[in-house]
Structures are given as C-alpha cells and as structure tokens.
Length: 243
Ligand SMILES: Nc1ncnc2c1ncn2[C@@H]1O[C@H](COP(=O)(O)OP(=O)(O)OP(=O)(O)O)[C@@H](O)[C@H]1O
Image (cartoon, rainbow, N blue to C red; front, side):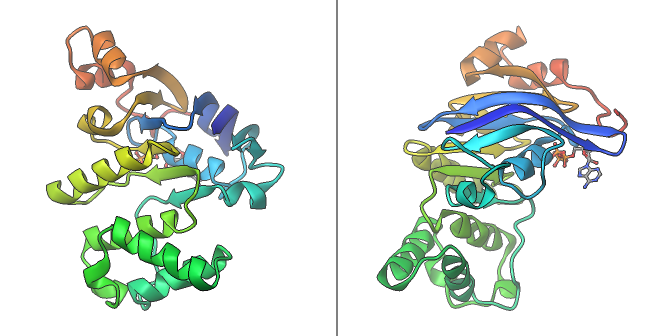
C-alpha cells in the first residue's frame, strides 16, 4: 500500500533523506523511529506530497505521489507534526470544512464527521472553539481530520506527542485497531509504543535505515533485550551536524 523507492531529499548541502526504500502493507502498522533530525518528518512530507523528493518515488495504493499527486492524496490521511489547525473555528466547523475539501457532501459528509468525532472521542468538545481546547483535544481534532475520508493509508507524525498517559493509551489502541484494515506509518520517540502498537518498525539515522524488523526481532538484535539499547547502538548522537 505504501511503497517508498530510493526516496532522497537534499536541502542545500544537507542530505536529510538518503536513498530510503521500504514498504508498508495493508494490515501493517510500521513504527518510524530515529533521533531528532534523522529525516522522519521529511520522509513523511514527501510521501504525502507536501514537498517533492530530490530523487526517488513514493507510491500509495500503486499511485505515484510524484506523477499523480492529486489522486494519491485521496488515499492518504495525514497528521502532520504539531497538529496545525484553524484556531478560530469550532471542532465541528473545522471538520465540516475539511470534509468539504475532501469532496464529501450531504449524508456521506455528515456520517463521516460523526464517525470521526466518535472515533477520536471529541463529542464533548464538538461545538467548542479550537483555541480553547487542551493540547490532547487539539491533537485528536487533527487526527479526526485525517480519518474523515476513511483513507486506506495513514501517515501519522508523532501522533501521541504531548498527550497524557491515558490519551496516549487511547491513541495507541486506536492506531492498532485502524491498522487491521489500513496501512499505517507513524513516527514516535517513545520506544514502548513500538511494542504497544506496531507490527514492524524501522530505525532511521542520518536519512538511512539502520534497523528493520518486528518488535521481537529488534529486541533480539539488541543483544540485551532492550529496544533502547538497540536504538543507542545503531543511531548517532549528533544528527543535526551530519551533512
Ligand atoms: N525545509 C528545510 N530546509 C532545510 N533543512 C531542513 C528542512 N526541513 C528539514 N531540514 C533538515 O533535515 C533534517 C531532517 O529533519 P526532519 O524534520 O525530517 O527530522 P526528524 O527525524 O523528523 O526529526 P524530529 O524527530 O526532531 O522531528 C534536519 O537536519 C533538519 O534540520
């Protein structure tokens, strides 16, 4: 469902993503790990068509984001890093706006909004202005926008960032449930999330894959039974300085 083929991004002299190749199949939740500056968000922004790759390609449901971006984007739900929203809208108003952009109309539009509100536990704040929401609710509003059109592929950039432990648990459970019928790529810095929600994980460092496997395989590779130890072994400390 997601096919990343030799994806590369160069920012001036900095190679943020370096010849990255991986796939995510339907029914798979792929955890995307790596230190700060490893190239996770840049990879996600290329897969979702927000920025063009310098080289390589990404296909979603067989459709190239480079050659047929509009068609590919209909298959993707995207939660960008730091969950950008329109603060002066209500949650319901924002979701209506996003549903209209997605081309949903009439009963289908209302059903989609109702389903997204329920799935993301937003019922109590639906009529509240976004600028009055707590961080957790803001995050879930942005997640609801990504689910509106029931996409086959979900790209979630740090979906549990800033959430309290209860909300983290709920979002992980949601990802696990959605992953049964979709292909999900999600980035995180919380290594325990790999075991909690992922069927597979890759670790990237300086734009390259340095480990790939099921949670059990990665734990075994560590030699100590600790994913944190593997992460520390295969990643570098100072990625920002690396060209
Ligand atoms: N628009 C840009 N122009 C120049 N450099 C950029 C740009 N976007 C990202 N970078 C650089 O590319 C590298 C990869 O950044 P990216 O945001 O993809 O990393 P990340 O793995 O998502 O990091 P984090 O975990 O901190 O979110 C970093 O060195 C970053 O400074």
